[in-house]
View 1 (tube, rainbow, N blue to C red):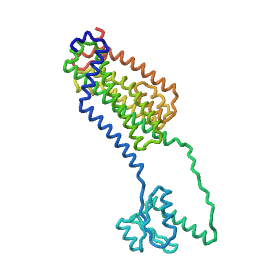
View 2 (view 1 turned 120 degrees about the horizontal axis):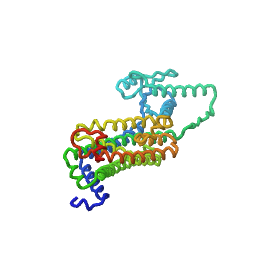
View 3 (view 1 turned 135 degrees about the vertical axis):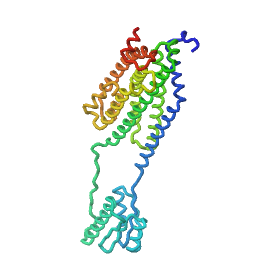
View 4 (view 1 turned 90 degrees about the vertical axis):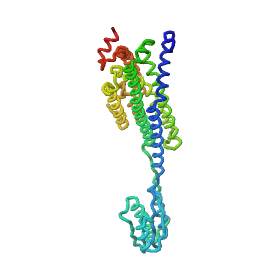
Length: 395
C-alpha cells in the first residue's frame, strides 16, 4: 500500500480481502474449528455405518432331539433380522450352566413335545418371538404330517411400499438439516471474525490509517469479500468431504439427491453470508471495545437461532404456514428454504421469490449499513447509536 491513491477501488478492496484471508488462515480458532467440523462430520458418517451394519446376534442352546428345529430357529431369526447360532448341549444341567456362564443367551430344552426356554433373567421380545415361532412352525408341520397332509401350497405375501421414496426423502432432509446447522455455525463464526476485526481496528486506531488511503465502503467490502471467499471455500470443502464420505460409506441410496441438497446449501450460504456479514460489521462499528460486542451482536444472533429452529421444524411440516412464510423472509430463508426443498416439493416461484427478496434485502443492508459504518468507524468514544452514526456520516 505504498501508493494507494493510484490504485483503483477494485484493487483496494482486493488488498483488504487478501489481508483478511491471510490473517484468518493463520488464526488458530479458524484452523481448529475447521478440523473439528470435519472430524465431527466424518465421525457421524462412521457412526451411521456402524449402526446400519450392526446385526443383532443370539446364541441359543438346544437340548434334545428335534429334527428341523435348528433350521426353524435360524429361519425365524432371519425373518426378524437376528443372526441365530444354535449350540447343541448334552442335557438340561449343561444348558443351565451355559446360560449362567453367558456362553449362550438362552437354552431350549426339548422333551418329546414339551419345550422349556432357560434364560438368565428374562427373554427379550425378539428372542421369545424366534423360539415361539420356530416351535409353532415345527409343531404344525408334525401335526399335519400325522394327519396325512403334506405338500401344502403356502402363498408368498408380496410387500408393496406405498411410499417407496420415503427413505430417500428422509436422507435428503437429514442432509439439509445438517447443512442448515453448518450454515448457522459458519455464519456465527465468520460474523464474529468480522465483528472482532472491526473493533480491533477501531481500538488500535489502525482504522484511521486505513481510512486515510481508502473509503469506508472499500474497507467494508474488502472485509466481507475476503472472509466470504474463505467461508465459501470452507463450506465447499465440508460439502465435498461430506458427500464423498456418504457415498464411500454407502450411507445414501441416491448420491444425486445428496449432491443437489449440498449445492443448494452452498448457494444459500452465499446469500446468507452477504446479508449477515454486513449486519455484523455495521453492528461492530458502533462499539470500541470487545466487551461491548455481545450487546450489539445479540439481536442478530437471536435471529439466526430462530431461523435454525424454524428450519428444523420445516423438516416435519414443509408445507405448513410457518415454514412457507419464514422461507420467504430475508435472513430466515437461507436456513429454512433448503430444508423445505429437501423435505417436499417447493414451487419454483417460491424459491425464486425468496432469492429476489434476499438480494433486495442485501442491497438495502449494504446501502444503509455502509452509511452507518462510515459514520461510526472514527468514533472511538464508547458505544454509538445508529442515529448518531448516520448524522456523523452526513456531516
